[in-house]
Amino acid sequence: MKSPGTPSRATRRANSRKPQSGIALIEVLVALLIFMLGVLGLVGLQTSMTRVQTEAKVRADAVNLANDLIGRMWTDLNNLSAYNGSGCASQTRCREWQDKVAGALPVGQGAVAFDATSGNVTVTITWTTPSGESHKYVTSTTVSKAST
Image (cartoon, rainbow, N blue to C red; front, side, top):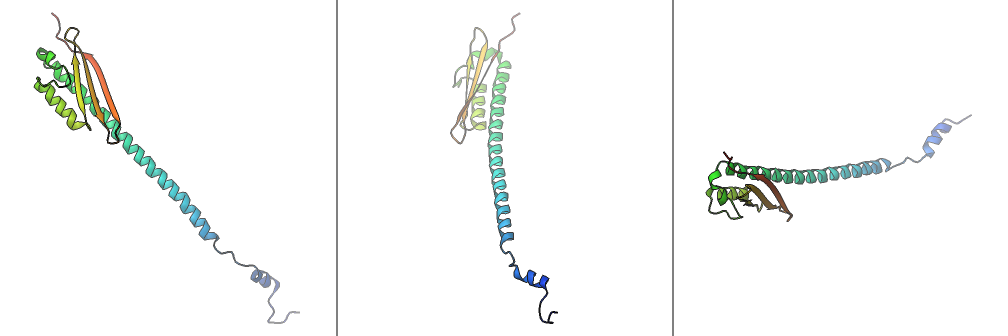
């Protein structure tokens, strides 16, 4: 028989085990590491998405500006020959368009080439992104008076 002050076998077994300490802390640190890697991935994705979205907007602006010039040329059929060259300073509407290109695109420049015999027009718009990459948009069409 046991004496009253002697612990039972189950109590002795429970007391002989050392409690594990620090495991929960390691699990929390691993979870934080995984979470931080996920957050860094999302930040990188957001940065990439913003850059691509900005580039797409600038390309769309270049297309709209080229179409704007072609529209100006269609409304000014009597002065088509003045829309030739990168300066086209002799034509007010072309000069206004070039100013518009310079203001809308980063380091933007516009040039137009008009062939009077065929009526072919080639509009070239160039721009440089803040990272230093050069881009170019070129479109061609025919603008001429209808022959009667």
